[in-house]
Length: 142
Image 1: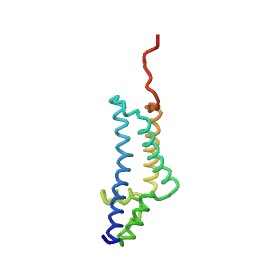
Image 2: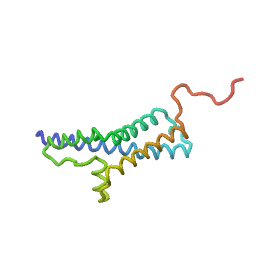
Image 3: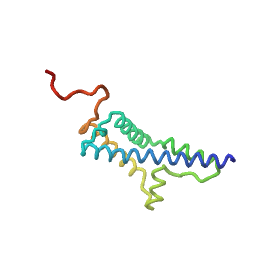
Image 4: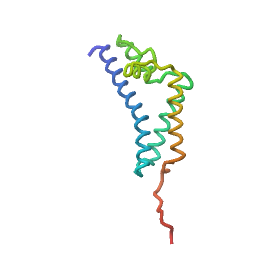
């Protein structure tokens, strides 16, 4: 196996991981809201909710500070090492532009990520997660 092939393979693997991260942020939110509406207990799982909040918080922080996602940077580095084409924009901008053929300005993504992050935070307030610890009996003690 030559180096270029290995770098390309690792870049593709990182692309899949990045896509799974994006799917977790988007579909995780839908699952939380849907699960709460259907009164599924897992939707209140503290660790799932915290991980989801931290994930979108990272995305919002990156866009506010104007930094490129480390996964995009690493993927670009691997593609460059493989002698392949790299992204000239962020991961989401690149794939959205390829999927819907429209080039959104960076401020669109900043606003979208910020609003989505705010929605996730609002679910913490309106539909708070269940804190970890022993399950409490809802019945009053005698």
